[in-house]
Length: 534
Image 1 (cartoon, one colour):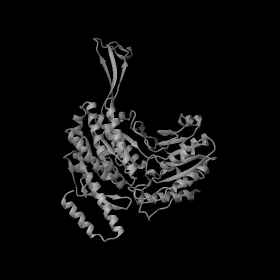
Image 2 (tube, helix red, strand yellow):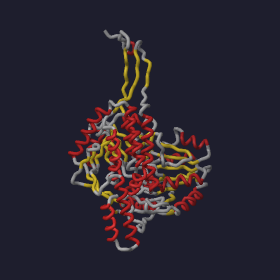
Image 3 (tube, helix red, strand yellow):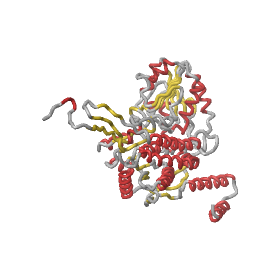
Image 4 (cartoon, helix red, strand yellow):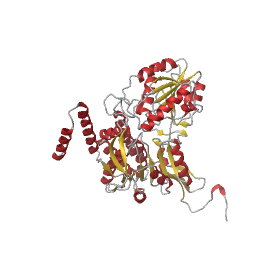
């Protein structure tokens, strides 16, 4: 910090009246400025980038707001059609060279990206909390997730395996291999403003692809901060155009979905928007990788460890203020333990500290905006109109800030339409059941199919839940909650969740094209199936 910076800070301090409130505000604003400086962020930031020397600004900007206060943090300029065209052209041109880089060498770049993220783990995590509203531990955990996927992708760069097959024809050999696909369009949502990008970017990069990222317009600052980190890594490797950024509204996403230069669009967001993206991309015969909504349930049977279940339900339903696609939204409890479990949860809920997500000890921050608060209150009202009993919470908390709510538990007489609808808020619906078959039927009777869990000490119940007639979700767990998937497994769901798979396992195949090869190393040309021709 130079002398002029210190002098300005002192002047600002003297301009404050000597009240506790103003002093606290001064400290908060100074801390925010310091945080932004650590991440190379300014009051106004360019929102288009193709590399270290490829920043571009425009006359239009998006303002980033702190959801805990609704106060402006900073601005990011948006992508014009001309800038969009430049970004895509750069991504295409870079792909033509990057695809020929050996995959293990591509892995070295991702290794360096992971190390660069380690250096900004805490400030970037705090920015996630500041801009999105999740608590500090979850914000830093999200950046750790970015680091973990980079570590995974480094190993993957030496494991992009194909298959060798025996040919029916003498002196012939068959095999398949995987080739880079092309420039990838990545469209992400606000609730995981950095991690979802990394799931796609790290895997796509080792697969030999370049990418263009359109982040949520609610969280543009975190995207700019990540781009600064990516730029530094690209500069160290003498590259540009590998990681590209295009901040903007729905118009940018529309251009990407319609653009035939993107063989794949990876979209994370709501089901209604995902449906539009899928239809648009399919209309040009492109591929779409969809990670959409979840209406995740936990079944708790009469043999379950209720202490374990309570902890899992608390984090699953309240963590990130219920704004995870894997958040627990339905509790399906055996009628013999439902009241006991409900009482445990009500007690736990009433002890949840709600407030500034950057403060120590806080477990739940705000919803992302006032629209989300209104949606939650409407859902609570509708559930009560359907005969639901509000056991706790379900109120707005304007005394804490404009977007704060109390997490709700609502006991429902049946799985009504509002229960079958994903509300992106901390609402947990409680349903009772008599038999396991009834519980699984309730569990599956929703349009979404992302994450699921059962808490049981019965091997038979666990295996039934995991069997072909059990959970119809992409993720099915036993004695662990629905939220908090770790790197290594493929992440994604079925039905209206979209069917896509990201992150671990063989999800890398979505970012590559399969090629079957036949080699004739003999002097004859026999035809398949013994056909004689000529």
